[in-house]
Length: 234
Image (cartoon, rainbow, N blue to C red; front, side, top):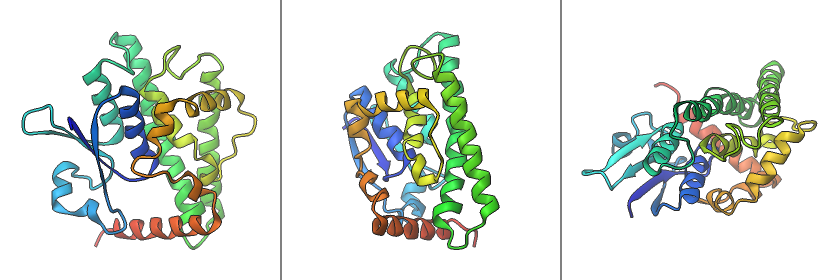
């Protein structure tokens, strides 16, 4: 295969698998055992120095070219194929702006909401309210943009939509309310119906059903806690 995707069943991992499916690029999947700490092994750190998923290696480039950070991977794939991001300066900038909105806002805030709402055994109400409230505020920004345009960067579907959708689709897991955001709902439903999106969120496995199962959700939270502990400095 031309590409190898190193990934796990997380929103950031799904961003890349959805994009690969949309682009129709052939790729191999290497599921990373996050619970076992595989992401911290030297061979993987050679690919991703940050020890996080996802990462890719493009075997079309002599010697293999590694790319880490999900947003950087999306941009690389879009530029490699000339799809999912315009080539003109202003069109490209619109896509990058909304991609950075997800990378710097939606993802981190939802990630922290997950930590305090789902993963930490001790509940800190002020922290939970802070991150859920900021997540909701960011959702209203998306809703406002989508009141004006079909997709986030205009009339065309792009990597910005993929990045934001892969996170906003799990709003309930983060405890973030989505009621009263009709444009976000319209946009989310449209992407959820795309065959590539449906397929992409099953790579390397589909976690959607487990998020809605009480016992499975407890296991997910426990596993997430162990990964968080693994990331603490020695």
